[in-house]
Image 1 (cartoon, helix red, strand yellow):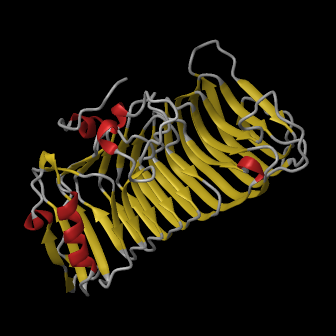
Image 2 (cartoon, rainbow, N blue to C red; image 1 turned 30 degrees about the vertical axis):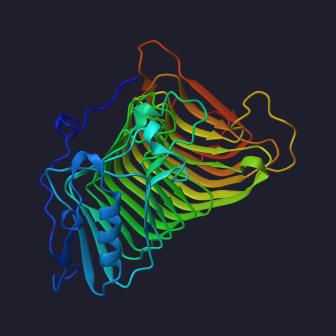
Length: 401
């Protein structure tokens, strides 16, 4: 399986990400100076071989226990190897800046042991956390991807971190999700680059669970699974100017697994590109679940050889062999507006539940052409109510507004 080499800057150069990101010693309005603590002052060697976890934790305990604005700096030109590690709050400091300028690398699967609970670097209950810099988080994905049913770890996990800011970092070859955001409120992710080979399993770019007011801007996500996955308990998710490809596109769900009640609302995606992705804008739910996915919009989307650009799949996980159920996650008030470009298989697939029809679905200003000349694109439209206008190919089951 292909592995990306983080020792070369060509990856970032190829996708147009500029490396000269400056960090500041001042915070917010420029009035408050941050106290900077370098991990090497606590004994971290940064030679790429020695386990520097102890030094990182000692440095964290120092800044977490101090008042005011604190910065934990990982210096440029060094490579720090970390075992599964937990940076735990709450902290006394008003703000903590985890400033990544160098490189952090993960242990291989054989070095992993039983620790970490499927997560590598964990930030828990840290309010007002900033993770930024032009450094690299390098997972050990190639040592995990071929192992069946292994507990592959997420690279960066944030739990209960309100007012979280992630900026300009790069994550390469995560064993599983690159970034997981769980039970966080007020999150901004800006200018991140997430990279794994196209066929690497479950390497979601950003996985969001039980979180609200999450804003993702100007980022590049090229992985083997969903570029962004928005799961149950999420609301107020805004995604703008994200380049996605390869990968599985941008997904709401899956929702309702094992008859769960899950809710997602107020998700807005705009000015994004899907290039060579398996899917584009997707909502996926399991039969037998309950709850809802509503108030969702996908607008001004560029498609480049996207296999299935528009999908609502309420038969996820069973396809043509779904068991009889009496409940379903309700999907309503979903808008697909301004999709333009090419697809390689199905243009539009609205496969809704016979138990609970999709309603309030809007298709508008859509032109999807075959990526291969002369090929006919599939349109599926079952158990759905809504409107369509200015859309190619034709979606005959929806009404004109």
